[in-house]
Length: 368
Length: 187
Image (cartoon, rainbow over all chains, first blue to last red; front, side, top):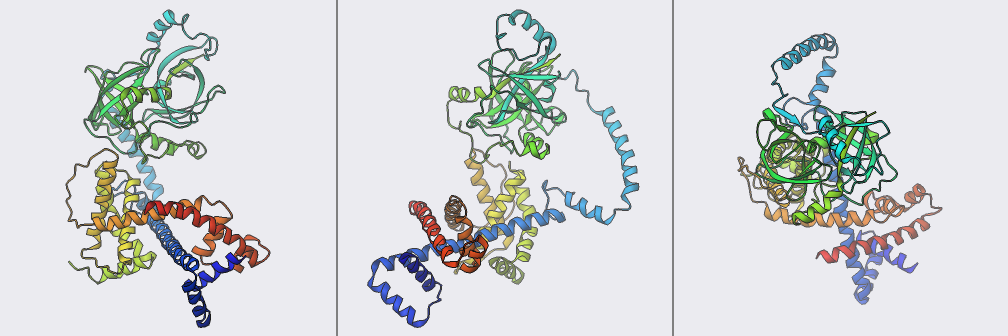
């Protein structure tokens, strides 16, 4: 109890709440008791830190408030471009009545434009190939290998046939995987880890435009990981950056390496990179890592007539896709802090592979 | 160039945490910083973080007694953001290819100061957050919101102010222990 009183006295002394008599008594006490003197100095320092902390916290809040308000009014915007969501809201408020007519006209124009785009857009077929493993190749594999390998814990229901295969990788320790949308051609999906263990999975989100899909391992046998060794990059990557990938062009995991050759993908597609790497059917959906072990993209297609030219969807699209998911799912996916960097930084490649291997899965899409 | 009177008024407003001044500074400068960062491998979120750090640095400068801002707010904020962002890029093992197109001023000293402040802020933040409830809210109520002991006792449901004071004392001792454990190492 004495300590409490003493502290109260110190606080009153420091805030100047003491009257003259108390003050001189206390100052005398300080002079004669080094312990008390020390406590006063220490507490004064601490209170000062508290004050600075308080002021800074308020300032941070004010900044955040200003940011949200300006975002709402459209005076700042996410893309940094001139047309903004905020402006749209303002316009909406102003011109609510006109919009009905405008919408009709707009709808018509949109139809015309999409027609024109379809008509004029380059034919992708034949020029680029998706890298999922198609029915035929897999069937022949199956004929030879199925009897021998992992029939033991096959999760594909009786009568089901694998129609396409690809690669996927974990973005969350609880079993959320990213793969390419075009890998999922069947009616169900199972995933297999590099050790051959098969798990049931379900599709929780598909974005055909970005060619991405999110799977969730839904299997009691799956044990969540403690942490992911890599991070998923939100920002862009540099031309010339060395890259590597892991994937399943065969039933076993295969390593490949190369470099980032252009900041855009096929025909200037700004959602992907061009990379130089040997990629084969089955590599689709595989993670593209840089030297530090950050995921910078998702390997998805290759150019048909050129050797080693492949394309990877930029990793930031993963964030965009997840934020577009239903909130109840999106809030469950924790992709970790991108600022801390990956745990793989500075390691030798062999070690890096050893650590990420367990997070890269063979994705089998089946039909029954 | 000496900052003109509008700029002085803005800085004064910032020093007093005036929302109008903060919003004006935000509105006048954010787009510039956003363009710079997004053109240099950054994202919108990076731009927001870096810009806010810069305004806090400016605030700290406006607070200090020896305060003189010898450049325009715009130039100062841009210089700080540029410095902070290049550093961040370097930490990520990347580089920026853009040469500065805008005028910049030396901000190294201010940034050193700011980094120290930031570290102190983080220590206090960690200490407060590891206290748990009701300690955290009780101390925040008393020291940050400057609420009286009576008021706090009523809010937290203590039967009287003395009991609340007792609890506050115990919490404070824990907080100080947590804070100084880190703070001394930092020195």
